[in-house]
Length: 160
Image (cartoon, rainbow, N blue to C red):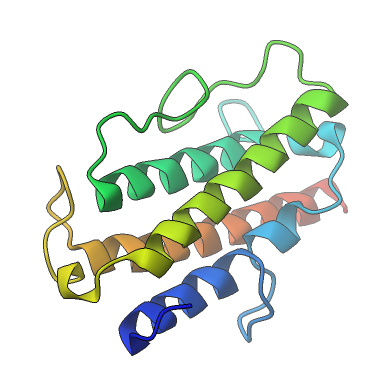
């Protein structure tokens, strides 16, 4: 665990947005946990994202923020596509489990980078970005919460 209070605070924000109890309500992991592939594939209308796509999108950005923080050009998202990666060719239960596991793994890897991040570099610009490293970390937490809210709304619209 880090001894720097700034890093500890960033980790707390990231954790609350992803899988910890927080005053704001359901975090990203809580919004996804227990969903079936059928529920994850439901669309509220044409050209609207479904939960599965949102999961892949949030997973992708966890990887990109980790790449920016580590400044590692060799770090690539393990799925084809960017920003909104496509659904698997066979979107079945096994594929859903793999993509949900990928979300958890990318979060774990990002969290590990944040825990080791040099606090002296928080105010510096992120690699290939106009945002600071601290803004990337706060931003990914905000991104998780934004999409957790979307998922909760989609679940309500679907009647879950």
